[in-house]
Image (cartoon, rainbow, N blue to C red; front, side):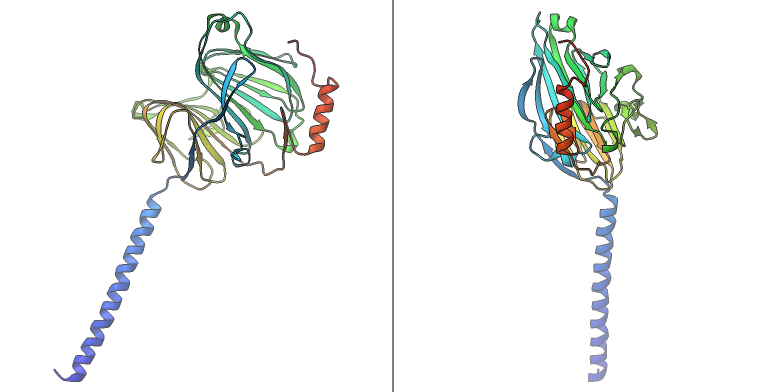
Length: 328
C-alpha cells in the first residue's frame, strides 16, 4: 500500500473513530436525560423529628414542628403552626383538662382528633365536640375568644389521647373577616378508596384527583387525612409552587423512597413531580399543601397580623373587650 492510501485510510479511520465516540456520548446523554425524565417524583427536602415537647394548658402534651425555629412558618406558608400531641394516656380526672379562655386574630385554628375527645366553646356562641376522625375548624378572623378541653365523659374516664393543632395564616385581605366555626365529622369527609385495598384518602380541603374537600378556605389549600394499610400506596400531585409537607401520625412509611419514622415530619421541595407514599405498616398521615401568601407577617402570641401596628391594635381591642365574652 502506498503512503498516500495509507494516510487517507488512517485519516478516514480516525474521523470514523471520532464520530463513533461522539455518537456514543450522545446516546449516553440521551439515556441519562431519559432516565431523568422517567424519574418524576417530587424531591424530599428533609425528614424532621419533633422539637420542644411541652404542655399547652394542662390537657395537651405537644411536640412542635413549626414555627419551632426551623423557618417552616415561611417555608410552609400559609400554614403557620403545627403542634402534635402524639398518643399519650391521660388518667381519669375530675379536674377540667385543656386550654382556658384565650384570644386569636388573623388566623384559623384547626384541631384534628385521632384518639380521645375534645370540646370547644367560643365567644361567638359556637360549641362542638369532636372524637376520632373529626375536625374543628375555627376562623378567628377579626377576633374571637375560645377554649378547648377534654370532653367531660372522656375526661372522667381517661384513656389514649392523640391530637393535632394547626394554625393557618389568613391573607391580608381576610385578616378581619368575621369569626366562624366549621364542625367536620369524620363520616362527612369525602372519601377515596385506594385500589388494591391500599387504604383511604379523606379530602379535608382542596381536591384529590377531582374529589373536592369539605372545608372552606381563604386561600388555595390541599389537606388530606390519609390512612394506609400495610403495603398500601397513595400517589398524587399538587402544584409545584405550593408549599407541601406531611406529618406521619402513626406507622412507618416511605415518601418518594425516603424512609420516614413515626411522629416525623416530611418537607417536600417546591418542584413538579409525583408524591408517592408507601406504607411499610399500617399508617396515618396528615398531608398539607398550600399556595404561599407571599405577604409580610408579624406574630405575637395568639395573633398573626401583617404589621406591628396591627398587633398593637389587636392587643388594645382585646383589652377593650372587643373580642366578646366567654366564661372560664
